[in-house]
Structures are given as C-alpha cells and as structure tokens.
Length: 593
Ligand code: TSX
Ligand code: MN
Image (cartoon, rainbow, N blue to C red; front, top):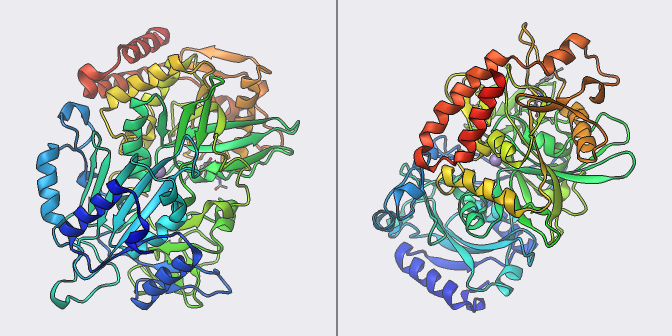
C-alpha cells in the first residue's frame, strides 16, 4: 500500500523522521494480504535470498540461509537503555539513552540507501483484544516482512484500529546499497545493536536480519518492552508456553509453563498424551501475556501467530504436531536442502539422506564433519496449522490459567514435580530456575546456569524489581494459579534418564490436574509438596519401584548446596532483592537442617 493510506499523525511523523535519517529508495506499507506475501516471497526468490521448495513436498514454502555470522540472538549486543542504570539491573547491558540515540543515529544514517523501507503494522495478540498490543516495525528486510506475516498479525486491519498507543520498532540490516553496491543474499552488518528504550517504549535494532534480533514483535517487544508495560500496569509478560488439558471426564484446564532453552518447551506445548482419554491442546509455545480478569482469575493470550522453532531434533517421533504445522506455508532458515527440493535437519528422520546442500551452501554427505543444519536453525510456521491448536487460541479474552509450571534440566537433586506451598514460595521457585547446559549452546556441557523465570535474556528492567512485581501480583490475583516446579531430566547413576518424558509427561500433568481439583493429597517436604507415589499414574510404564522413588528422592545435603548457590546468586541483585525471597531461602535452609 501507499503511504497515503496512513492517517495516524504520530505514525506519519515517525515514518518521515526515519525516512530522513535512513534515506530509503522507497516506502511500502504492508496490507497483510496473501497477494502481498506472494509478491514479497517471489521478490526474495528473484534476488536469490529464498529458494522455493518443491510444491509436492512443502506447499508454498521457502528455504533460506543466513550469513554464517548472523545465526542467533546477540545477547552481548542487547541493551536496555533506561535513564538510570539501576533500572536495567545487574543482568542487562546498559547505556545512557541520549548517548545511545546519538550512536544509533550515526549507524542508521543512510543505512537504507537503495532499499525499500517496509512499514509493518502488527498486533501482538488477536486484533482488538484488550490483552493485545500494537507495534509498527520499519524495516529494510523483506525476509523480516515475510516472517512477521507468519509470526504476528500484520496489515490493514491493524492500521484501521491504530491510535497513538503503539510501540515503534525500527530495524535495519545495516547494508546500504550505496553507489551501486551489489546486494547479497543475506545482507547484515558486523556491528550489531539490539536496543530497547523502556521509558519511551521503543526498539532500535541494527545490523542483524536473524530471528529475535530482527523480528521485533517477539523477544524485543513481547518480552522486553512488554515486561516493562506489564510491571507498570499489573499484568505479566512471560517466556511461557500455554496449553489446555482435558481429562477423560471432559474437564478442561489451562496451564502456562516457563523453561530455559533446550528443555523442550515447544514439545510440551504440542504434547501427545500417552494416557487414554487425555487431551492436550496448544495455545502458544513461547510467550504468554497474562492479565487479571473481572472474576479475579489470571487470563492468558499467546501474543504470537506462529512458531519460530528450533529445527534440529524436531521429528514426527519427538513432536508430531510441530512437523504437521510446518508441512506448508512455512519458511526454513539455516537447515539443509535436499536434492529434491525439500528440507532436512539432524534427527528429523532415522534415515539420513545420502546427499544434501548444507546451511553453508556446501555439498554434504553422511561422512561430512559438520552437521548439515545450524544448531539454531529454525522453521517459521503458522500456528493455525498445528493439529492440536486450541479452540480458544485466538479468544480475545484469553484463557483462564489454573497452574504455572517452572522447570529446568537437572540430572540430580530436583524431583520430577514439586508443588509450591503458596504464591510467594512459587515466586521463590521461579527465581531459582536453573538448568544444566547442553551441547546445543556454546560453552561447557553440564554446567548449572541460573535462568530465573526463564527470563534471563528477556527481562526489560531490573530483575530484582521483576521478582518484586511477581510477589505483588500474588496479592492482586484473587484466585491465583497454583505453582509447580518440574524436572523431566533426572538421571540414574549410570547416566540414563529415569523418566520417559515427552508424551508420558501427561502423567505429571494429570497429578497437577487432580491437585487443582483437590482429588489427591500431597506429601509436604522441606522443599514443597510432592506426590504420594500411589497418586502418580505410571500404568503401562516400565518404571521400577526403585526408579520411581529415585524420581522423588530428596537429598537434604545436596539441596543445602543448592541453597548456598541460590544465596550466592541472589547477591547479584543487591538492595533490589525482595526481602520475601531472602525469607524463603532462609526458611528452606532451616527446614533442611
Ligand atoms: O522435549 C523434551 N521433553 C518434553 C516433552 C514434552 N525433551 C527433549 C529436550 C530437548 C529439546 C526431553 N528429553 C524430555 C521431555 O520430557 N525428556 C528427555 C530425556 C529423554 C530422552 C530420551 C528418552 C527418554 C528421556 N528415551 C529414549 O530416547 C528412548
Ligand atoms: Mn523462547
């Protein structure tokens, strides 16, 4: 669409200001239509960025590889520019906002020469929902436009309801086509800045075209900026999946769950239960926005409209519903290309193709030294293609949340499931979330990393204030969800996983379900409430009594070591650490001794 379609003066002023700064060749306003998507993807094919996949394998889908130095979120280049450094906190990078603006204006100056600047009006959440919020992204990347079309709700419908309450999101890949510079298939810049202005509620992203660096509705808006909005207005913007669970009797409950990376969040969001009669349905796999309803319960929406999932490891066996979601209308970035115009990645199938083109555009065979797909390669797939998508996934009122789960990957110490004693204890569990590193991330494998609420790289303000906000929310929610801590990853002394995980996790969800309905009692221990072993449904599971007991073993001395590590971790937050959490950790120590 032409710029004349825009009537909102604030938006027009901003577009003009950025046009003056970035100096694009032309401006295009996205209407969000299928025809527009076809044009943009065709243009990406013509320019060599996209390869159209074989229509008989993946209908209306595209393959793309990035520059090898633009493959993941850049946390060390991510900034929270609050006026005072204390408000960014000990975890975020910070720079004084005026200083940062000067630096950014230098980078963005003429950065769009020779390119089209796309205006993407987008809604995070169903258009018109009271829980939703609107953003407008200006970008010089048609790849970003195509992905935003799948991941959010974009276009004319959003412009039609636009008022002055929107988050301006500026993005440039930082590769101007000055003086006839030839374009490349993945333009980006060595210098990268992912910058948030929490007081102004704006985002400036420079130099990267990949994922969370560039699709600004996702981590930048829906988590970092939204977490600030949420604190200011008494709601929650969280790194959580949302699922509906239906019992054989037809009762339905919704839960939200936060896990650090590499714990299988997307797998849990699309779980296929192994217990007869139980059903799990998907509302979202990554982000939850939760507001208090008039009835005093917590209501959640998924602000996204698609899945931007890690590809390697995803298979019809480990996540059937994700595989069904990406069978058409999808974009694949940094996976491998098969000779017949399909895609492949490590562990997708038992059968490994004889020959592939890898993500670095090299010929690949089974005896190649490196994996064919980048470990952080992704599929972008529309959520409404998920076979288990929930009927209420676009309900503007959200879905009522009955339980919140935290979890991490722990080979030892932490039981399969623990119920928090109350909200404040639950906040303590959330603040102490920890996970052992896997081979999927850089650095040593098996190291314990604290990742409070799985929000470590995503909280847009001081994490100490965030803990306090969670405690305060407990006082405002009349009927708060129960809080649980789960660990699917406990190992025996031979290093084998004790718990089957995947579809069998429904057994844990069933216990939680029955706890909410007060159908079963629980066993109160120093660390929280755990199931009476008879109440965990392990029917048809090949689980020995010894291993069942091992799943719930509480080694007090091992836990005391964890207490020490939590206390040490808490020191980071200094004065900002809420007293309530110090009380909780002291209380736990007392009970263990
Ligand atoms: O996603 C996982 N979940 C949650 C599923 C709903 N994974 C994969 C984590 C990496 C993304 C799991 N891995 C889970 C799990 O519950 N559990 C495990 C550990 C495990 C791995 C393999 C087996 C059992 C447990 N069994 C066999 O391979 C036969
Ligand atoms: Mn995530």
